[in-house]
Image (tube, rainbow, N blue to C red; front, side, top):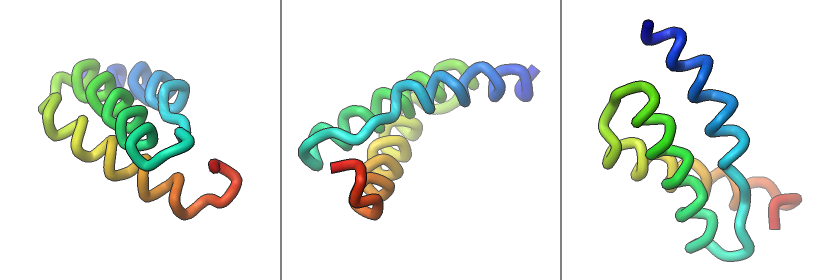
Length: 67
């Protein structure tokens, strides 16, 4: 059942994760994707928000094409 949730959450997170113009927007978009992924996988929503925000900011800051 957990694997099925992963296959549902992964495309949703990819669709929601996007780089914003500012670090705040990047964190907000990442947090939204993290919350959705955690909810689908029945994990910690707060943990998903924190990890999603941090992950998206790091990703966007490393990729020059995102800004």
